[in-house]
Length: 427
Ligand code: HEM
Image (cartoon, rainbow, N blue to C red; front, side, top):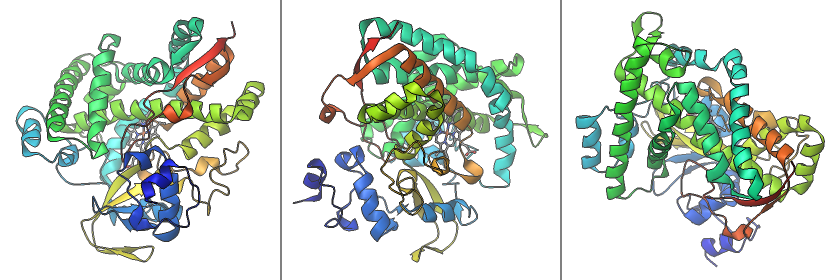
């Protein structure tokens, strides 16, 4: 039996599967990558992925070592930034000739990173995040008002997409009237990370990304003239190390990352959390009875279904990781989703356990210098979403057979395509 049919038949024994049978680009594996992660973590926790040449790291200890040593494992992937993910020269030219070649400046190593990070950290202070609570509650209320009477919805597009999109659009200081276009751009922006674009699609995506750049440049200029309390104003008016304004490329890189980081991942976190609740009705009951359990539930959701499954670093010198030699200049792929299920750190890792003492040690937001700056906002959105939804809906069920659910193919994101639900309105 080939490895594909083993995945499809749901065989859970990992014994017969070897690392050389694992294909992380296979959509079937991406739909349920955890068996493949177990195989890699146990047999080859630093594994050279044949199709990409990435060194894929799957054990918690391995990720920890990489994250703590940015001098060897740099987040700077090259001067071309995102553009290096495009394989066709014609797509690359679109950036060079019509837009900007932008590598997000948050993706620099210490000590430079700190100068950029402090410019955007001001947008995510505890005070500002707390201040956004009434606004987030209003959005959720409005979404639930619209969805509740029919007792049915397609949860991803009806709820999980609009909530973070509206929140980050507001945080950036952009108008609600542009929401639809911003979603299209945000989706285009993450597509290169799927490592699965056709040459034609590369062209379309490059055009969308350059259109987003021009849109943001225009708004950054307006925010410089007329600053408000939002991310674009902070970027347009902040000074790097208190000395100089950011260049257009620098501002664009950070603004794009905030837009996309605030969007795609939070959407997927909420969708995955709801699916976990459907699979664990006893947990849904427990949450209904004691809202304090929402906090551990959210951490377990992030641990079990990390929305960002993996990201890259590049070696600055020849090194050895967990006994595996890695030459200089090679990509190292940190598999957050695999580290989060490492039994050496999380006993019975596949169990959704609201009493897990170290649930918050998961890697879903990475750790160290580049720990997600939007983590408090994402946690707040998730908490309010589940709290308010459980208040308004009872008997929540899947409206299709679970086998019909599927994930967008991606090496980076874990994204349910749809989650059709039916439920009883409680009000
Ligand atoms: C559940 C939701 C989220 C997940 C799973 C997530 C995941 C991550 C991860 C794994 C990193 C580390 C990148 C690395 O080490 O290479 C990161 C960084 C980042 N995230 Fe998030 N994120 C989420 C929500 C957000 C939100 C709401 C924002 C809002 C603006 C955001 C903005 C950023 C930015 C700007 C960085 C770069 C930080 C730096 O490099 O200093 N993220 N995120």
